[in-house]
Length: 250
Image (cartoon, rainbow, N blue to C red):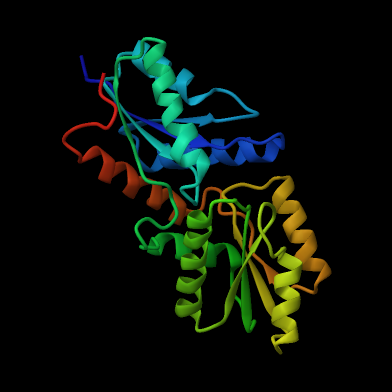
């Protein structure tokens, strides 16, 4: 009998907007198609099912010995630091025995901005003839997490040789429209909006509307299942799988 495939559990935040779950499922299918030796499952912290603990229980029941959990998050804020590990703890309390290794988030870690993340953002923007950029994120009250968004903006600025400002849809200023206004006031007439979102939803809709009201020149869509994101997830999985001792062994 062949050993079970490596379980890979993608953990999204979840949203009331059905487009978010559709994007997450599409991403899971794309990762699975690129790596058929993996058993890739989507899960959600809120609003949608299954929860990560439920997926871990299913993998355990099906005979898997190890799972890699990948937070579909671009910052290591509260959800990444608390909610995702709590799902593993809950699975243990429910009697799940397989070994679980948790990867880093998909955004910058220890000051390193993944090149694949930059390329994915630019892929979503497409050909761009503008003179400035706004990197629009969902938002967080965590100053350290916001710092990693700034790091990504700085990497984009260096990559394109253009100014790149950060905006947030919630929890922190500025809104995308305000960031666009500031750049236009500084003499930048063709401002592009980059979506620092993995999936569409109500916050993204509000961000896009705010930027369009301010006169955005071009806008990139959320990252969803771009090849660069698929490759970045694979990098995180392979790095975690190479660890000798899982972080959450039974």
